[in-house]
Structures are given as C-alpha cells and as structure tokens.
Amino acid sequence: MPLVSVVMPVHNSAATLGASVRSVLAQTHGDVELLVTDDASADGSMDLLRDLARQDERVRAEAAPQQGGAAKARNLALARARGEYVAFLDSDDMWLPEKLERQLAFAAGGDAPLTFTSYYKVDGDYTGEACDFVPNGRVVAARERVTYRDMLVQDHIGALTAMYSRTVLGTRLMPDMPKRQDYALWLAIMREGHPARGLQEPLAVYRSGRAGSLSSNKLALVQHNWALYRQHERLPLLRSTLALAGATVHSVRKSRI
Image (cartoon, rainbow, N blue to C red):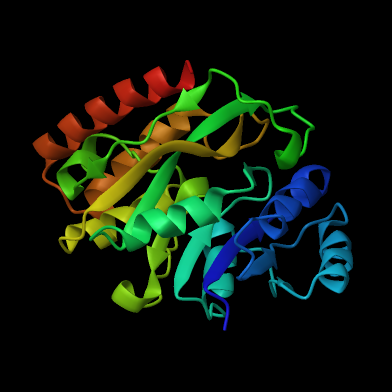
C-alpha cells in the first residue's frame, strides 16, 4: 500500500494539470498514489489524465458520474484512498520536489494528525514546472501551531499543503459545500481537540488571481464564510460576526502577498 494518498479534483484544468501531476510524481518521497477525479471537464482534461495514468501507474484517474463540484470530486477520490496519510493538491497548483519528504518527517516528529506548510504565491499565468521554480518573496507563512479557536478567525491552512493521518483520524470526507469545504474539514477535525502543526518551510506553489478560481471573488468568499460559521459551525450571531471580521481582515492581508 502507498504511504500517501494524494487527492486532486479536476475541472477544465488541461492547461495546468500536467505540471500539477508531474510535481507529485517527481517527489523525492515517491511512495504515493495520486487519486484524481475529473468533474465533467469539457477541455480534454480526462484524456490528458488517461495519458498520464498510462505513463505512471501511481496515477489513478476516474471520471465523476456527473458534475458535482470540488467537494464531491475530492470525496470520490478520498473513498479510494489506501495510504496512511492523505494530502491535497488542486490541479492548478504544484508541490516542490521535497514537499512530502519534509512534511512526513515533520508529521512523524509531532503530536498533531493534521499538518501543513508555508507556500509560495505566483501569478495565475505562471507556466513553469515545480522543478524549475525559483523562490520569490511571496510567501504565505505557516503558523507553528493552530487550534480551533485560531482557525475561526482565519483559515491558516493552505489546502495545497494540508496532510492528515488516516491512522489517527480515519478517512475524513469534506462537507458537501459549494465553497470553503476544505476550511470546514479542518475545523471539523480541530473541533474534536486535534491541533494542527505548521512547517515554516515553503514547499508548494499556489497560482493566485486565477480567473474563475474559488477565491477570486472576495465578496462571495465573505458570504460563504458567513454560511460556514452559522450553518456548519452553528456559532452564535455575535461570535460569527467577530470571526467574519477577523477572517476578512486576514484575507485582505494575505491577498497582498
């Protein structure tokens, strides 16, 4: 069985998908399976995935029966996970070559079943490969330790860097929400008393400002954060208001990196 199951949802990502997949397959720790679910793409993404799977048996691709959004696509992949750890990467982001090796060692040396790392930001039109990436000054820094209370005022965990232990937590699916489903999953894990630990080294590359990306519309993000606090976390009105204010301020600061 592979040590790490990597979950990747895909929707019309043919332009960036190859680089994302190659960044996983080129990891210095190669004991992985890459579970990719295509969410009814219309741009040839599934054909590209089939080609990549033929080239490397670690790529396990499937097509969703119908378009259902990122949460459903991720959960279809999670249902097939066999690894001791589950890690996440979207089909337009990349891991640097030593990401898994460094993070696995970090996870083994601590008491938190959920870990994450710092990461770099690049413009949405970046076309390079992870192996050629030249570090820039645009770093979203990971906090050393994050609790549920900390997470309510800011999502400190970049989904492209998150990894959790199935040995400790079992297979944890993402809530079926149109946005913020990754944030909701981290909150659900941490609400049970599990902290998250952050590795300060930047080990992934996030394309920012992408047209149509889930985080590109900040007003919509505020609305979905509010729904998360009120409906998913069932926070009182005042606590939800304070959490939303803090999250909005931190989101604006992060967007300026």
